[in-house]
Length: 603
Image 1 (tube, helix red, strand yellow):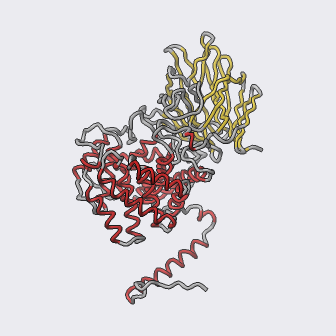
Image 2 (cartoon, helix red, strand yellow):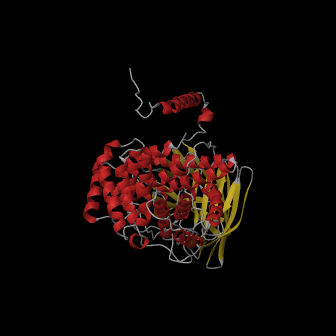
């Protein structure tokens, strides 16, 4: 027999009534939840899911790994924000009754962070301080440690001064600084929030003003070269600050910007729950935690305004993003980038995007989503069947089509240090993201690959001129969106591709439940570049080509290219992106070429 013994505080007469009323409430809640139908249950997504996922992220770090990392920091000092993030997320999990085996290590790690962070400015405190503050908030709320110990850690941050502790921030409202100023702003705001500093609204307002200049007409944030991840990262920072009470001079501008861009975010997330490709820091697990963060904030906004339909749809996209992350967290070993190459290779990673920093980053963003989450809002599945199109501003140069459980992303002016112009993504709901293409590739990547002689690639039109093939994936190609429209269960686009101001093809894209139909039209021999996925770092695909049908088989799915005329041939060239390796095929015919791409389960 098991006895539950209330503590002495509960046994005080004045608290007994509340104790018994809470017991009745939770008993009714449990019984009610047990009686929910399967459909109703699927509409519930609790905040605790975020904490469970944080624990899964942390499981990628063995105790030996944590000890090695800790010893490096003790020897070399804090140099960046990966270690404070790791420390904070361990503390948050401990506060939620998880990973209690790490308490002795955590206390020493926390002592180091709280002592060292206020002393130096060149160690990315802009990122780190808010992480430690979040941890302190959880520990204090859950009373895991004696209050004296919490107060001792908290007191260290009263010594923080902007000039001494931060490297990058705006000194004037029109200062030309990018998102580090926003990180600094939120770290200072959270320090004020816990009473570890005197509120300086002028400093906060200056940072908020300096960041407004980088927003486009849709409220999306233009970090240098407009990487998709950093649009969400910066909007996420302002979502946090507004959530925790900022109502300063620039509240209205930022609130409006977040609302406009938030609506776009829900539309440009793929049917697989994936953040759009484009630019630096892409194809990492933390990308989808940013989707969750942004859309939890927006869902709460609409729920407060009484629009539960929109709020529920946004949470449906959140759930899909979390499911995407969970599919990668189920891999063994867990990797922080979306491929299956050994971690030690750093394949697909920029120099700054190493495991120790970017793996735990996923947990940090998940925690912020947890903070912003209102789990009383039901979840509704997004409508993947109806047709839809979305074109972003020319700053972000993207077009999205969705229909019939398919999703397409097209970049018409790519950053060739990461991507290539053309159709860089075709997903189907439920299918592996990479079986057709999830992101394009370049011949000059700023991330690591393990081969040479790669060519830039995307699903792109081609034209033969003077015996040489001109490719829409080449830098010289000029892409222009002529028109796009959506039907009840279809979406279409017409895009021209021009070389040397005189050679041109026009390509029609038609998306529906039968897949993607692509028609290339031009004068002479026209072609279509077909990147065929071959290797994810661990597993090879199976490719077959009959000349009119090309099939890629991977993880019980197949991507099938079918020509209505012409032929498909292997170019003998290869391409590489963050996801893995590709063989480049070409479909070709005279004047007009039509190909249909279908992604289906293997029979």
